[in-house]
Image (cartoon, rainbow, N blue to C red; front, top):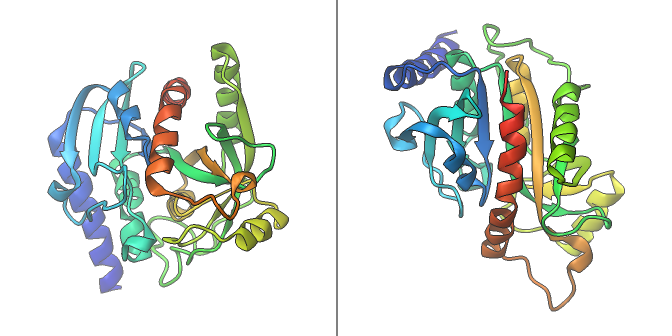
Length: 275
């Protein structure tokens, strides 16, 4: 019991600190993945808070993750945005990886938009494609293992329709108006930090995966546990069909590919944050 109370106290301390830094009270939050931090440039009147200043937050060490939490206005709507996330492969526990989502919940966030850079498993996908996540397959430790925090959600949360159908439909409508083509598919999450072998790519594809990455699902599971409405999108930054004996996956290439797609994703996310 004391351990659970301490955790809730940590979440509340961080949430209270964020409230002290701004008068805005957003109900929508965005988590920005590798190379997608520039999406935060579209946030107006931003209050930029380095993770190092937020109680109990860790540091983001991944390439393309700036490590700031931003609160401001996007498309006329107050939003909170994480400019970089924490990963299990960085050596953090699942509790540490997902702490920001718990803090968001205690702050009052009810809608979470998540983004990531992912490898394309679907042979029809190309580098630069945007994929709406319709479902996921998890090869990472479940962040809800351990004593349940009853104050935040049920012991056995339903995972049938994790990714909001209304938000997915709104994304398609917005993209159509903007002339942006979208894919849909299943995101496979694995621990990293190694990129997948060709055999692993084939296995994930056989299991029904369309894209694969090293993040997102832990945050989504916890957001679901907290009762949030969730939307997820992947930027396809490299494709299994393009890999050969002379082709290597490279982190810098992933960030560059994500950076090129960031403008399109920013426009779609801006349409989704409107209340």
